[in-house]
Image 1 (cartoon, helix red, strand yellow):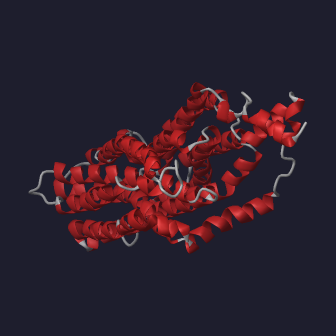
Image 2 (tube, rainbow, N blue to C red; image 1 turned 180 degrees about the vertical axis):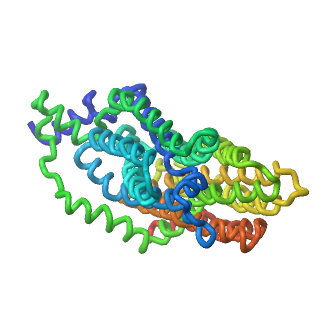
Image 3 (cartoon, rainbow, N blue to C red; image 1 turned 180 degrees about the horizontal axis):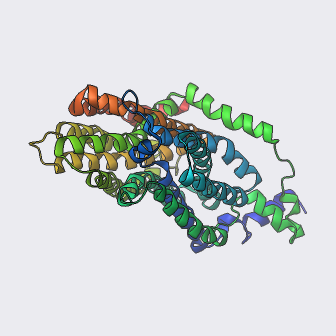
Length: 457
């Protein structure tokens, strides 16, 4: 029996994840999506309460934000190391192990007796959280072969990814009447409750791994099994160097990473600026100011539904592609993101900033937050999908570069927020961010008109 025949047999085999029933695929994805949402809750902490417990001084520097910074730094590094291992040695076991370690790390966060313990355990938690969250994209690629089928799952992943970290401060606010340690206890209860669901729903989705297991029961498939696996050292070297190389040598990836990272960083800047703005300008209490973070989530929800017709527009572009007939045009991903970035991101920041006066109703800056949430969802989703289309051969490494930038911006950009909003004032601090958003919008505008020429070089 030839290798070609064995491969053809596997391509049509019912055990092949590409051939699974849609119901089975969505069971896996919805479970992973729920986990992506829930894990994001741990990204932030009730920073002021933690600072009061451990006597952390914020007078010269926002030291109370360090628990969030180290979590996101871990989440930036984790996927670089963990995802290549999952992709080559199987997703299910690595996914479940990462989730288990992440869950275990909630315990020392809850009972930490000093600030250093909290920082160390949150770094480890962020590392494994990054693997768990970003593994959802691996699951999607394993089960849907064509981009028209992957559009909705990836858009859903982006929304849940953003929603999780946005809901974190709201959870902190809701349970504020309890000790801050109860934020972690509640998270621990939730994560433990979800674990049996993971054990039942998450199946092995890596084709080569499933093929190897299937070949033990169907000898006709043995010739299709790839016997060679790269060494772990080789995997680590490639996994770390290729994303960095693409980030430094590919202008499209560099500027789109800046664009998406800036957006993701704004989610965490809001955790610093929203309480500061609403308590100072409108005398809102911590609870009310924390609940206003939901404006970002409301905007992101609108952005999710707005992205669905954009996906359809992209698919229809295949009928007008003169170069690759029948293939959608990557630049057809961009039209919605341009007004979203101009009006939603930059406009939202200006609205948030210049609406922050006592004589202006509080709903005005809140609308600005909603516009920002809309733009953040649309932009990050656009970047993920465009990069995947434009860099098909190295899509995994390209997306890893974007994820690295997003988490590093989320980790370190908000450290400047309190000083920036205090020194420049609420209006000009948000305006500065708005001008940066305007500048970054030039990237999708340029690529919309010149993207094909850039990709052909």
